[in-house]
Image (cartoon, rainbow, N blue to C red; front, top):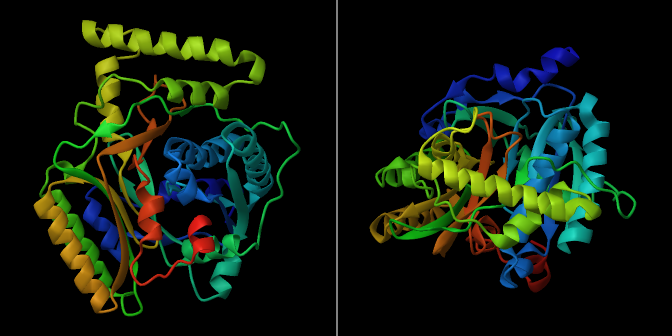
Length: 392
């Protein structure tokens, strides 16, 4: 496969618009030969979240996607956000750029956020030697944004290898900064409207790699869909126009050098003030329409995904939550699945917005009090010792 066709691979994957399609194996295509996985996660994320640093953890996870995509010229490559980490699949021709981006983002996360980010580059060929694969599907969250879904067990294997110390990427020299243009953490937490924000992770059990697990996924998605908009935690007309002061400071630190951060902060605050003014007036500002932008924020949000298992952060009432939990308990008892749940009052949004003038901005949703990281630490059938728990 040529370099051009490699870069166009994800665009060639058929798109499905109903989320229940994540359970249909026919929607997935194997990554081309010669591809790599660039991945990272926060060491000690559960402890950091326990210390109230969940926004920093999410910012660090999203920074991996921002840094790598900016380094390779953005492009249309499959990626997944995991709350305390992320993974991007790329042709091997982009390995040097991805490696440099991971090396620099490690430094930024340590120096600016005070967190420890581990990173790795894993060849897909090594995954296939283990009898596993990385297959990709393309889900259309809105007419403007599609997200990658992953199956085949390869992502999970790569993450385990990274945590064991294999395939690691050495950090760049102190002071090195990644290109994090577009990375944003401006929004305040979004309160639940239906009941609670529930972060759900369900992965195959010993007897759950086939149709039984697919049926479980379909059933859970069906219950959440009864809530309206699939239990979407962001209101249909977008989040309230209330912004986090600390989030603005984080964004300024991420997108400007030390000597220019105060200017960047003022620029962000001016952007936000204009957004509020033009939203209230109901008129566009050039090509920017604040009301349309808010609606697109909701429509483009990544609140559910499949990454070798089902991951959702949804706003559901107690009756539907109990039905989902009952399904998961039954599946666990039969060896079909293992699962983790985490309940909280609100959701958190971290964004990658290359330009607000375009409608393809992307928004990552997680629970605001630990979300996926805490749910993963609670996966049924998985015993975590003190060191392993801190290592999440």
